[in-house]
Length: 575
Picture 1 (cartoon, helix red, strand yellow):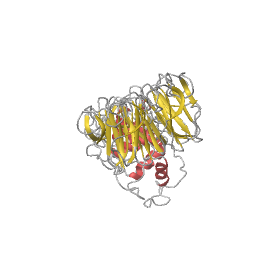
Picture 2 (picture 1 turned 90 degrees about the vertical axis):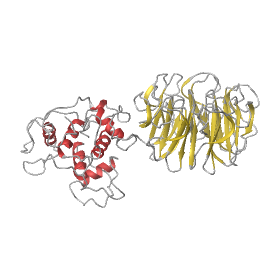
Picture 3 (picture 1 turned 90 degrees about the horizontal axis):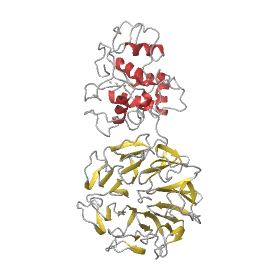
Picture 4 (picture 1 turned 180 degrees about the horizontal axis):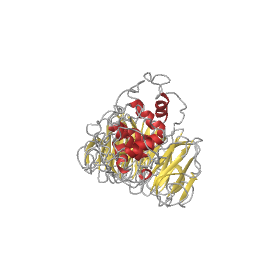
């Protein structure tokens, strides 16, 4: 058991929805000045308050770790606005780091060292380390407070502070001598995902530890990593994730039961969706959520005034209810007031409101159970927007139908269509996403196009609407794309991401609130796999199965236990 206190996309918004007296003092510094501290457990592991340090770049690997250290009272930095991340950590501040992370417990004995000045800022911390058998010093009567801490020593400090747990696996490093004093400690660090080494097969045990590294090691020691996420769906003001065990958890706004936990109470942290298992894909709409199970059936929950849950009623559901008649579903997309599903055979069925022809059945009649969309075959992907729908066929063509006042059907007109109509001049498409009033697609040449309402969301450098596809400026090597309410985002083949459009809530993720008419890099985001956009927030699922979000978080839609909004990506959804 650890002694350190443990603190504990499948679709775009397819309304989009479907788819350190300080640790910075020189070693050996005198004085007993201490920072104001709080309970370490109260510090946010994923979304600490902004640290305000000018030498800690936003998005750096140690950015959140440093923020957590400040919020937990473990460090104040080396000056009012500096952390000195490249500075070397010596044994005196190391003791302070560990002691403060443990909650500043009062030791009962004496340290017995001759090189620890009485009443020094670190005397109590060193005494506690001795009492806890975390260190015995560097020699008889010596602690050597000014000596730098190596990576081997650091591993041993952390492992002993955690209670010397026995690791189960192997470390895999070629520079860790068998039976060395730090071998077990390093193995435990690897197992706990506290470090992955300095390069493939290397741990570099003799290297000195920098302040940035120590911040990260401590943060990871106290903040367990989030469990893997298989898929993340971004809704209007809520988000849902499929976990590794194929269950689902949701967080955020819940006025209509869209979290599926049996209540209508907002949740800042993910809560399990009641009775839902074996989920393969998920979609979050404006106030509804839907999932497909491994047996091909589907279930939806939340708002149902238009029959968009597909259960044959108009009754709001706080827990999942089966979608009637569907048995071979491969994908589902939930929107504002209607939903659509894709079958294994490549056909599409839709249900819910139909006042603008969004069901594609050549009528304006709504229906509370699925109804096939005539004339569509060989469909490989679907995406539902606000009162319109789009489908991608195996041949790379796109069809859209429904509401079209902003040209979101992409057929060169603003006339609504009651049946599927081809998007003009568009071929070789590999991915689609329908937003609130616009849509986007990725082409086989890895470029992207968008159409419909603009004000920046089309990414073509102007604000005028377009009723036919227009190229997103300067964007290539695109892997996937997501159209939101007033923003759009894309993941590139190199794992970076870009966003554009409205940025009032920081949903573009570039660290500002400035609207962007062309794609801007999402600050610090690498190794992204998929991306999703909601009403005023955006999220990405990374290749390591962790998630980050940015933008508005007023309803807790990030799932990080806070309602703090962010202008840049922050790790979230600790399911």
